[in-house]
Amino acid sequence: MVSRRKTTEERPLVAIMLGSASDLEQVEPARRVLKEFQVPCELKILSAHRTPDSALRYAAEAESRGIEVVIAAAGGAAHLPGLVAAKTLLPVIGIPIKSKALNGLDSLLSIVQMPEGIPVATVAIDGSANAALLAITILAGKHPELRAKLKKYRKSLEEKVLSAKV
Image (cartoon, rainbow, N blue to C red; front, side, top):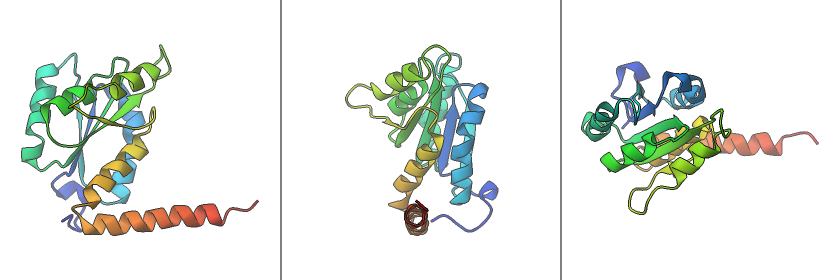
């Protein structure tokens, strides 16, 4: 169960991995959503290409540290989510990061085209808020207090739409 203490004092349930420090701005919405839901997370910058041994080790050890879901953001060739998924049995959510060359389409296709047997859930380009909400949805199956918060959140979305002035 997720305790009521401050998220910084708790054991992280979600790991957010970034292929580069330049992706920090794009994952900030995910951090905000996780904080709003009081889901403790940790953030790690590790590259599938420049720090492959460290990235593989981090992914392999995540579950033993109590991580339950991994969010991996990467741009360009975007191999980080697949690399992580190949090394852990935890659910992995890929965030394709918008790139200069192809506006993020390259990142999206790199993440979504995983071979059968090594799935990576994938959200929209720069869709880190939805990555966090998907992680919370996964966690809600085990953590009833998150399920209740998610129901309340979804209800607020419904009310916002229904109360919109036309």
